[in-house]
Image 1 (cartoon, rainbow, N blue to C red):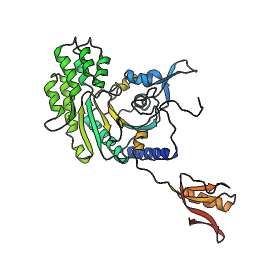
Image 2 (cartoon, helix red, strand yellow):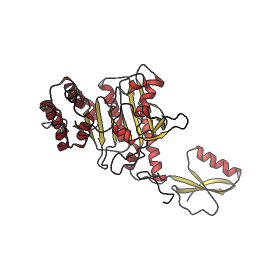
Image 3 (cartoon, rainbow, N blue to C red):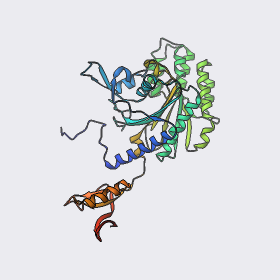
Image 4 (cartoon, rainbow, N blue to C red):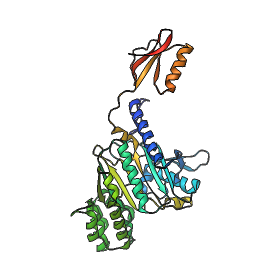
Length: 389
């Protein structure tokens, strides 16, 4: 096998794409900072049990594992950054009030998340700790949609769900295999779900089967929330979940984001099982998979010694950068190679002023670069001056 081959679903990022990704990363982190979010940088590897806190088998299967030669314990290469940020909030920062944290970094998946997905996504996201109210959920939703605006995305479908409904139904049938039920619901596998629920009581069976079809618009005669009221059992947890979704959908926030199409999918249980309330997924026309996901996960910090209300989102930066329009090569100044102190001083001055200056090595004067050299430094009138090409 040639040594230059990379593993399946792993790819290099070449200069033009890398520049687009880095530019977008900086703009997004600047956006989060303007909203009061503080940047954290968790490590790439941790002890495995810390990375899998509160998660389902999907995250476990996606996590690369290795043995630490120093401790003999099993390490994991992070496949998701939220457990790490929750650990930082609960154990290291240990603040009593609201904490707003953001991050950007690579994660590694043992298995790709979807068709054509990379196994080395770059996650960028933001999270709020310490507030249990709907205000925090609305803030992170506003910030996620604002992130997509920064990336030039002008049409977004936002699918909403509440993960409290399924546990409330399963509590009535403790003999059911919860993991299998979740898998069938995620796949919208009605025959498989019907077979799995053959021994369940009729109200639970009918309710779980109904979830598969409870997706669509929020308002109007075909409102999914209204339909859910009619077909789901009148359990307190189910009613509270539907009330929360209704309050979120009726928020005046959405009047400021006409590009967002709100919908509800009560079987959209994909992701990691650490979520505890409202969840959401953002879709854009150009991509088959969601570009971003998030939701509430109030119980994750408990494993680190301090449960805190928490909600947040993450975006896949590489896919988001791929939606950017082509970027024109950056303008640059070409300078001849020379050890002349005067030339070195002028190059340093121009670079300090924000200019890109390329020193052309002898014999390579006509080679193409990523940059467009529209000017050059030339010796003229006894001084080094910049002149147009």
